[in-house]
Image (cartoon, rainbow, N blue to C red; front, side, top):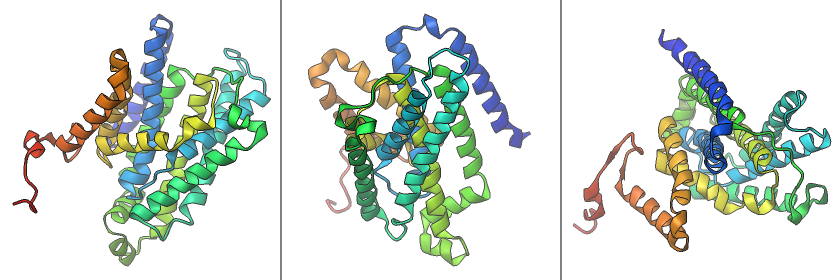
Length: 317
């Protein structure tokens, strides 16, 4: 019975998405937009969690994969002249999202292979550089709108598409981590030398992590492009990558549920502080610092320890 639970959760979540889709017109446009942004950030954070959390590779270029997917999907649907609501829009949009994921995963492969010998800070800097290279290339391609941005994208993303893909992603991640491949990821994360000594192909697992994570980052980019209907290279810079990394770190690297909750909270928080706009980002940054100081183990999966705020370090004692 236990092995069938993930499939049951997937089926129920897809049914729930379909039911909510019926009543989405009754939701305020502002709240609907926030909910969709939460969903897109959950996909981005969960896909980065595969690379950073489960495989132990520190990537800072996730926004580059998102950009590759966003522009790929936008170009495909724009060239097909798809109109929202038409019967042809659904298979066309699905095709564009798959293509977005494939192109992003190819970029992930390009990042993963040269970075195999690197780890820690060196890997982070390398992935950051690759992410910026992708953004700058897009910024200089006139057929993608260059610095002007890409306009005229059909609004095809909705609640069902976003949260339906979340359901599939969580189902795949859960089954992947509980499979033989998943144990290999965890072994590589814990100790690459020991993993290699027992016959695990460390290179292969690193590349798989980058490709799998980049694939869903590309899909998230496609969903984002077809929700905002306008994309610009500045939307996929270093700060965007940093936001995704923060969601993973705060949620607990390798914690599926914690990362989902973290992505939701860190998406809502700036909106909740909008009433004090002039201090919004200061308070947001301060709350992040406090969360990291109080965090013990995993977000909501661990315990908050107030004493850590004033507890002396071993060096001070």
